[in-house]
Amino acid sequence: MTTTRFAPSPTGYIHVGNLRTALMNYLIARKAGGTFILRIDDTDPERSREEYVDAIKQDLEWLGLTWDKVERQSERLDRYAEAADKLREINRFYEAFETPTELDLKRKKQLNMGKPPVYDRAALALSDAEKDALRAERGNGVWRFKLDHERIEWTDGILGDISIDAASVSDPVLIRGDGQVLYTIASVVDDTDMGVTHVVRGSDHVTNTATQIQIMAALGFGHPEFAHHSLLTGPQGEALSKRLGTLALRDLREAGVKPMALLSLMARLGSSDPVELRTDMAELIEGFDINRFGSAPTKFDAEDLYPLTARYLQTLPVETVKAELDAIGVPADKQEAFWAVAKENITTLKDLEGWWSLCRDGAEPLIADEDKEFIAEAMTLLPEGPYDSESWGKWTAAVKEKTGRKGKSLFMPLRKAVTGMERGPDMSALLALMQTVRARD
Image (cartoon, rainbow, N blue to C red; front, side):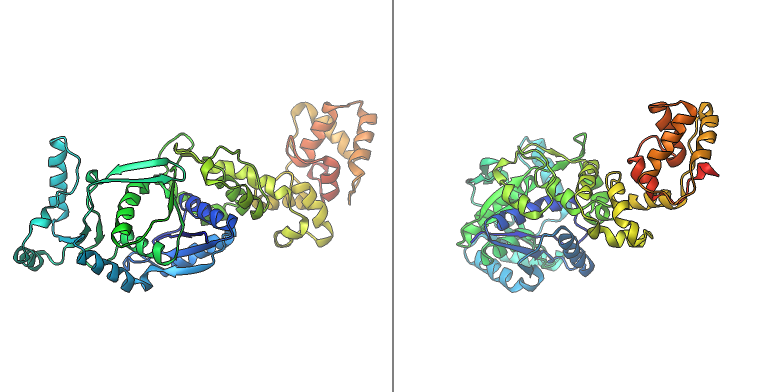
């Protein structure tokens, strides 16, 4: 059975970059009728917070990305310890004691010599007595996995054939000196124990994948199919990392972005398929193909979400927005007519309040100097409300007959005087909703 996972660390709110990974894994699992796991990678007790676990779940539920089960790495520490013991038994795990300063000096020296800045494995030459002395002086060391210096190869679902020389990569640290188990080994054990068949993640994990493939082999495990999607950039190709704080999913939700607008964009962005609004998850699932994504950096512009949100809102029946209409005070008998007018002229539901304010209170008239006399005369011909769908036609016909104006010179000044805007909804429908016209006063 196809099994995928989304494995966020609960150290902050998830953002659009995280969503890309979550969505791809979700769509693969659902299209295959498989299992989608939400795995909370909370092995860092200092930075992990329960409020972020709750927030991650809330964000995924808002988007409709439902999971089949939840796993927590903090509850699986015994399994990681077993894997570490096995690596020690086969002499693929060793303790190293260099300080960050010492490691930095080594890297600079290697770079100056034209060599790759790879850990030199000096710790392998330490005697037991030297290790004891270093522990007494510095505390426990880190535990590194000893890579076999050979080429690591796999066929990536997006990048194609990958080949990495393990000699160009430092032996990865799997356990810190304070005992914290790091993602690299925890993920290896989890993916195997949980039967994960496909792993989709960012292209910044390619080297990490290479080392994990070796760790899996050393532990006697096979490895899942890997695919590494491109990283998102800003609309001009700039690094997005500094802006991700403003692109948290909860911020987009607060801004009025609708789930299907966000999902429609993220399910196609960076692929050879055009971005098209989808109104239900089944359409996204059916049309998803990981092989249609490219390796080039992918430009993301949050502004693209708003036209998609506007188009999505236009598809909704009035019943789905009743709560929002009630909240701004639209009477029940006017909600259907008001929604029919407003939905064609809003970007998010937050815009509804402005349109109802116009209908309820009228607008500040927008009248050009050359139209002042014309508007004053026209307003004497506008009867008292309430207005209906025929009021605009009757009024403009009377004004045309009285003033001789017609066409744009007739309709535009009247629209601006009534609505305070040069463009907007059909005036027959809008005037029927208006409870007052300020230009009459």
